[in-house]
Image 1 (cartoon, one colour):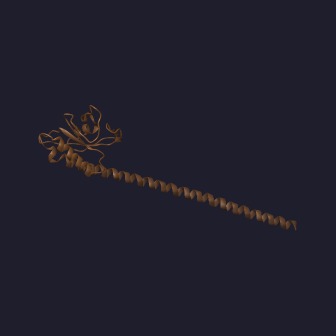
Image 2 (tube, one colour):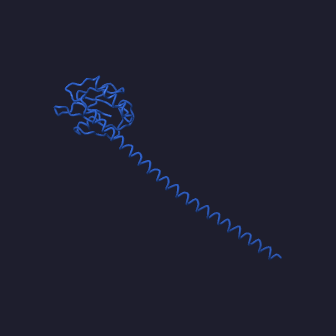
Length: 176
């Protein structure tokens, strides 16, 4: 009788051990599978976010380039003398027409500045990266590397475009 009890206990313990081992193996496999799935989903999500950011940046640059080129080619800027009030109105309309523009500025070779943000005393647009780059690009839109804005202190990237007057020389630039 003892032998049957011992055999029954042994078989019970064996079945319990096999069941416990099966549960542990299933849990480990489930954990590994879930971890791999979540890692893959996270990588795909990151790639999707990067792709969306690159597309958004491209669209922003395209619309800004188009807006600056259109504005720079307008008759307001192709005159011998510039009317500050008319320039301000044109810049304001361009800014309102493109919600992606945070600000837009006009700077002349004489250091005149028309903007909608408060700037530090003695601010000279001619030494700003967007102005210098746009002068060098000679009629093409120039994009700066990120820098700290003098008016707001924010990090930003600016596009600049200098127009060509009838004389063939640039004496003003627009920055966005």
